[in-house]
Length: 423
Image 1 (cartoon, rainbow, N blue to C red):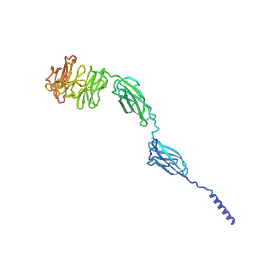
Image 2: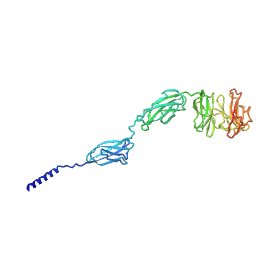
Image 3: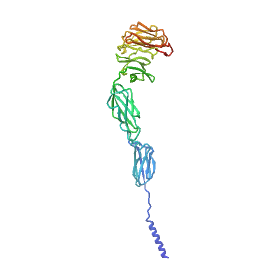
């Protein structure tokens, strides 16, 4: 019996001894904290997602960009910060027991790795070319390594003044520039943008527009509610060299060129009055001639004036009176007044400046008379009188022996001065 008790005690001691050799593995923890900010500006990024790998534990930054992850098992991690619109940031962390690690992420925008387009290549017109038409097609090309859509901006300068012509948001690689000034050298440059990176500029290229053409025709078009004056020419009945002379923002009409002065006189609406102006044949150097006494007639669409043959003076109507004025606006004088009070609508001065043809009418444009006077106001010949309907278009032949005019042979009369059958 004693032997059994001894064996039992021995076994219990062995068991107790073996149990004292076992160990318990304790998990140790640390803290990871930090901040997420914008690269370069260091402004905080709120609501950025912070993820630990490999555990995939997550949290989010507060409004000041800070985050805190406590009781994180001590081990090695890869910490990531993600936010829509930014490139994801990664930081390795070796977290020890009872330690605190601070991590700062500087996130760049998601396009930061995007490459800009190539500098535009200016293809045409060839750099330095001369005698180019005043309508030019510009050709250029750029490519984008990331295949982003490219928009272009074109700037055109000149050697005449400080004006800059700019064209924005162009998506084609061909662009036509119109109404360039004749005889002027132009400098052009193209900027390419992928709307991500800064613009990329081309080199500067030049071209020179041909000299002002000697156009034979001056005419008017209606644009945006205004009359606009152009010049042009024809080859084999095809129009060429059309040149804009007056701005579409002003109402200008009735161009009359004088070869001796090499000037074009015309009518323009100015402060609700109609006045005579002159300009060079290319539209430059516009000068106002009349001022105190404007041009007035029953219908300003029918009114006309006339140059002296040497180009130093102009005659024009004002109600029932005819005025003469120097081309520089000086020397205004009344030279004639109708006897019956009819309005003067048209006038034409003979080439030898010895006589003037007049077309007069009532306030409706009818009761037409066409006659000639000398320079003292005496009537020389009565050409047309006592007929119904409209008439006009008076013009002396070069020798002054005959007078051209038109007449509505239908003798139709209406409140809008409509002509039905003019010859």
